[in-house]
Amino acid sequence: MRAADIPEYVQDGVVDCGITGLDLVHERGAAVSELLRLGFGSCRLEAAVPTESSIDALDGLQGLRIATVFPRLTRRLLAERGISVEVVEVTGAVEVTPRLGLADAIVDLVSSGSTLRTNGLRSVGVLLSSEAVLVGRADGDGRADTLARILRSVVDARATRYLMLNAPESALEEICALVPGSRAPSVLPLAEPGMVAVHALVPAGDVWSVLPALEAAGGSSILLLPVERMLA
Image (cartoon, rainbow, N blue to C red; front, side, top):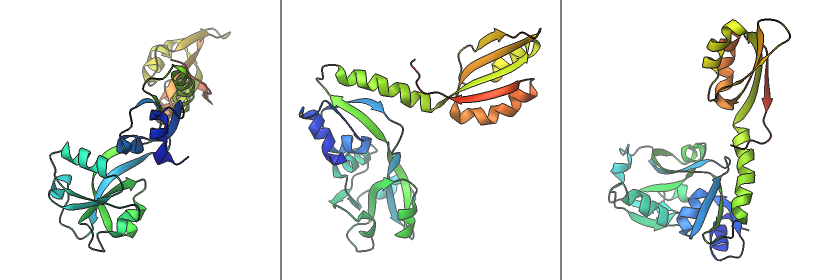
């Protein structure tokens, strides 16, 4: 199925739930429930102008013609900022419209920004951060919520690592203070007198910066393991 059609399929009960982009859910205006953000397909809905333009912020778009494949979303998000524009709806190749004289600026999805640069455009602001989401029927029977809980255990686990290390008991307070994002770590006595094992769940993005500090505090035999499932 086309990602753009999935919000309506879910709304109309053709399917119980579906995966699509958050931007498409808002653009289609379907009556669905957002069950889970899935952590992939990240992109941004941005406004962009020709590189030679003097506009350097979203406020500068006031009264201009904006080309986009997201007319509903563009009008709403700019109106929320008090910006009134003329929306030019197109179905593709949004980036070329300013050079063709069809619009003064564009609103489109951006990931790396390379397409904007290739077409002589630059961003003046982000309107919406999007990613893949699981959506369900607003009047669903609960089965989609069960699926969302299962998927959430995987999504949460991706961002987490299981940290294990050995340390002198005398350094335990300092090491526990260094462990990021964790509730109280598990502390287990070792066969060697005065030594303990520390086990903790830590955010994957923080762990590499904290490893040298853990080692300097007396941590040894430090292991990092991926987490397959994690239920809060």
